[in-house]
Length: 295
Length: 268
Image (cartoon, rainbow over all chains, first blue to last red; front, side, top):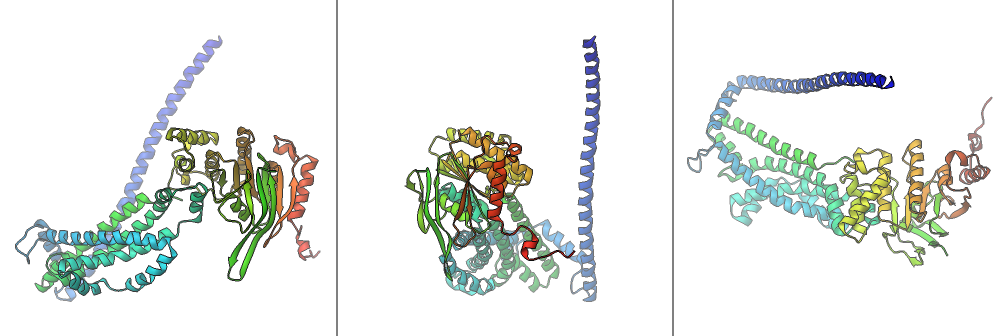
């Protein structure tokens, strides 16, 4: 008798289980669907507002070009030229006539070289300044003195030292890339909390262990922030630098187009410069998020 | 002769206005396996004494000796649990303990891993070993910190207000956990703990060191707690000795007992 009872109860139980499971699953599916829909809604909202912003900007632009009797080219004229430029970006008809892609690559190469060399100097010096008061007292006044100087002012010095416009351009990017990285690195190192240092002392960490387990992980987010700021400024400076140096590069392209009185090309180049700068920023923000931690 | 001897300890700091004496004339002899609480108002130099025992501070006078050897700097014979856990936020729970063990112990990697696992299991955190400290609650973080201190198998355990940041319920559990770990180690470890909680001191310690107010503070009184072990929180509060001791400690630590003592009078 009792056996039978338990059996029925068991059967009931499993039935109930199946039911709840099915319910649960459809419930979860619903949740998932809702989640996807919600994200889509917020995403499309932000896209909508971004397009709205661009439209407002575009109409101002149109008004302005109307007002200047199309001395400032209209958005449509500019976009047509931009499209033409992007259709064949890698043509090369001699030193003064190269495709936009080649110019862009030349600029990016210059920026990356200057930026890499700057970072290789700035990070170790930043660590020194952050870690030792004496180093700070030695280097910091120099940093404070030179930081506000426009990097373009260094161009003649680069020319004198390197006797080559290309190298001089790399040199000004190098100088530009120093400051933000150096200051952020030294700040990161100097702000290592006493708690973390206490841990290292209490458990007798070796210099190497302190470096790899405390100093670097703590200051890495600060260093990456510095690098991000540095490359943004370097990208700002390259355009002006190449206007001075000539030859190739997106900055030269802007100046050359202005001399050829093609404002459509100038504005197209501005758009491309903006997009590349944005991509640099996004890249470093991505790395920043990768190395940051929650306290 | 005690296991840990503090002799004429004086610690002062140079300031622009001259020497600031934080603590002086501290004499204390602690037996192996004893649990000592140091209690006193904020700023009376509790942490200073603790840092001197931990070797984070060099005494300006006197000495701290363990097994008749004057300590110099920090060492693996003393495990420290800091007030704010002090875990490294970018390392997993496992790595936080492993780095300490790896730094201090001289044994094979396999043995080190075993030590970490044993200590993680001891504080019931083995299933959380891959989490980052940011994902843990305050009590869990403190358990990691305690496991880390135990893992290097020190003779002396130094706890700097270990449960000060926890809520009352978690605090109670953690106190029991600490006693459990102490029992598992055959009551072999000497524990020195800073606290400002009288009940906590009475529940845990063999002796309570009361400091007077700084600057230049020193030991005001040492109370011996004769309550039998194992202690039961609910039982001991009814014992006459507990009540008497608590009253005495309260008198030592409190000068004013109501706002009337502060010169205020109720208007009726």
